View 1 (cartoon, protein in one colour):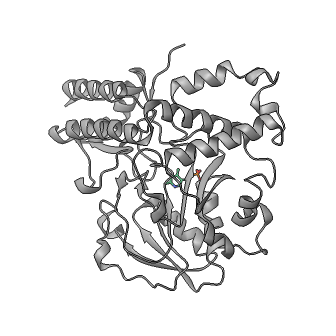
View 2 (tube, protein in one colour):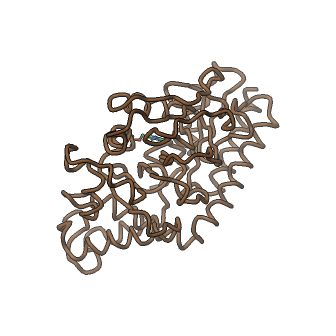
Length: 359
Ligand SMILES: *Cc1c(COP(=O)(O)O)cnc(C)c1O
C-alpha cells in the first residue's frame, strides 16, 4: 500500500494520523467492544464524542457563548435552501454577493424561498476578482447578507467582510479552520465537512443564538435550526461516524498548534505554489493576485492540448486528482490543511519536469 498526494477538492485528503487512529479504534472504540458506527447515538460513548467535537471546534475558532454549534446532516448544498427557509421567513428579501460558482448556486436555491437581491457580482470579470465592498448598497431591512469567502471552483478567496448591520451568513466549506476568522462578525457560518473537516455527510453550522428566534414551526422539524439547537443536533440519528472523524481532525489540529499554526503553513504552501506558477511561462493562474485562494489553486497550461497528458503523467507520479472542475477545465490543486508542504514540493517538481519535457 502506498498513499499518494491527493489534491482532490472534496472529499479531500484527511491527515494520515487521523486515518490511522480511526483504523486503530475501528473494531473496538475505547473498550466499548464495538465501532463508533455501531453504537447508539444516545449512548454515553457517542454523546462524549459529540461533546468533544463541539468543545474542540469551539476552542479552535474561539466561539463565544452567543453562538450555537450544530452538526447538520446533508451537504452545504442542503444549507443553500435550509438557510433562507430558516432565516428569511418574515423578511422581504435577502442579500447575496455573487463571486463564483458556489455563491451562484446558493442564490438559485435561495430564490425558491425569498426575493434575492444580488448586491454585487464579479461575473462579468469571469469571477477572477471580488467586487469593491465600498460601492455596495445593502438594504438594511433584508434578512441577511450571504457570501462565500472561498470559491472552491474558481480559486478565489477574500478575508475582509463588508460593513453592515445585517447578519453575515458565510459559506466557509473550503476555508474553515485554514485561517483565523472572527466568528463574532458573523450571523451564521456553515461548512460542508468534506473539504477541511472530515468525511462527507455532515455540515458544521455556527449560528448566533438570537437568529434562532426566526426559525418557525412550519419548517420540517429536522430542518429547523432552533430545534437542532434545542436537541443538541440530535433530533434524529446524526451522521455519527462523520462527527467522530471530525472530532479526530479537530484533535489533530490542536496538536498541530491550532488555526494559527495552520494559517502560517497554508500561507507558505500557497505562496510557494503561486510563486512557481508566476515565474513560469508555461503555467498561469487567472485570479486577481489580491484574491487568490490559499486552499484551491487553479492553473492552466500554455498549451491546452497537453492537459490530458499532464493529468495522466501526474497521476502516475503519485499526484492525484489535479483536474479542474468540469465547469471551468484546466487544472486545480486543492491544498487544504491535510496537505503537507512535501506535497506542494512534489507537485512543483513534477510541474517543472513536465514543462521541461513538453514546454
Ligand atoms: C463543496 C462546496 C459546496 C457543496 O458541498 P456539498 O456538501 O457537496 O453540498 C458548497 N459550497 C462550497 C464553497 C463548497 O466548496
